[in-house]
Length: 179
Image (cartoon, rainbow, N blue to C red; front, side):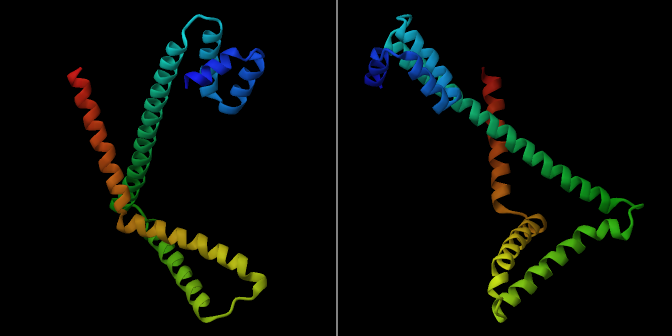
C-alpha cells in the first residue's frame, strides 16, 4: 500500500489522478482524494494516511452493517404488519366472507394455474413460437407459488434471519448497558 501512495505522491498531474479516483470509486474515492491531498501537501505522513484510510474503511463497514440491520428490522416489521392486518380481518365480525377468503381464493387459483402449466409442460408439446413466453410465465408463476407457500407455511430462512436480528439487538442492548 505504501508503494502505491509513494507512486501517487510522486505523480505530478495530481488533478488527473484525483479525477480518475473520484470517477472510479465514488464515495471512497472522495475520502481517498482527501487523504491523497493531505499526503501530497505534506500535512500527514504516508503511514498516517494509511491509518486514516483504514479507519474510514472500518467506519464504512460499521455503517453498512447498521444499514443492513435497519433494513432487516423494516422487513420484519412490514411482514408483521401484513400478518396483523390479515388477523384483524379474520377476527372481525363485520368483515364479509369475501374479505376473509380473498387471499385463500387467490392462492388456490395461482397454485392451480401452476399445476395446469406444469401438466401442459409434461404432457404437451408447446409450439416453438410460444415457448419463450410460456416458460417466462411459468417461471414467474413458480416464484409466486413459492411466495404463497412461504406465506402460508413459513420459511426457515426468514425465521432464522429474524432470530439473528433479535440476537444482534440483544447484544447491542447489552453493550449499551455495559458502556
